[in-house]
Image (cartoon, rainbow, N blue to C red; front, side, top):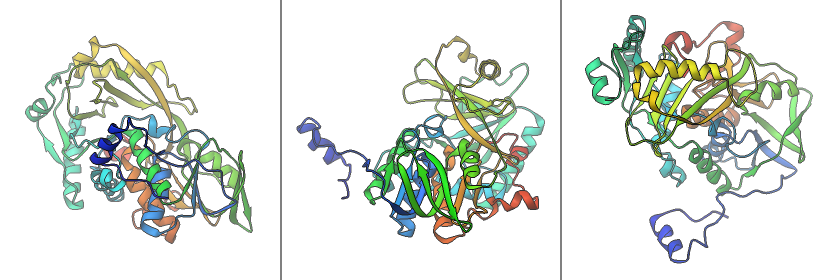
Length: 416
């Protein structure tokens, strides 16, 4: 049964009765024997895949199974940056689809995901970066994606706390996307979960996949800690653990898993109201609604499944950011965490059929997965439902065999 819509009238009504009438945002049922589609992974990408399977393609006999808790992986462990000004055409298309969906997502889900188009700057701190970002502006104009190059003076207007004349990394200008910004990561997962549950889908937490069953080269179900579940199609959307699921199904994926970390400062008064990325030093900074400065850097330089990260990255990234944002030096670190990201050789994602009929995989988003959630889910749902998606066509596994790489790391100097 569909839940009541959230509205100002519902809030007022519940306030009068001491908020005793709110329903659970999503159901937690026991798994059924069989589903048309099983989505493994209840993070943002998995939930978005299920949501658009129902909304766009009318497929609602769907289970989303999660070995931990909903949104407890990378979706709840990132720095919430959203942008779409990528150089390569396939990347720009899927990320701009995601940004357009983000812009109306709160209304679509009837759930406030706190999307904040505060603007995003990518600092050019070398002549090479400056030439590269100007090239991106021209490419984005051809792609119909709004972005612009701005000079040092405009950067200082947008970011008063910045030091333009750092001794090692002076700021020469920036690539600016006014539509870029942030959203609340937990709310994105919760909103999609509520939407899926309203369509009758089952979200099953604490349910780890222990095996993938196939017959004649076709998937027939999965074995889990809550019993066997049969399915017609299987969507594997588990980020850093994608290679583990693929091995269960009998094939390999060209990805590596490693930790990506971030940390926040103690809360301070409003100091920066845009998102700033400094790709030369691989650092980025924004300020949360609670006043914390959100800081992050690159991945660990070795494969691992840690969710803690490593101290040398904190020191390295903070040292570089202190030069550009001297205010950082006077703050204490409040929290520090890590997530497990899956990196491909060309630092672009995989949305693809697999050697096993009926199994589809969505992985390889590396360090930039959060911004892609709606577009990724939309494309993956189309791929699962129809067997083909224009948004996903260039991101198939075939590109690694054919050498048709989508190298955003080389193009942008960073895989965010």
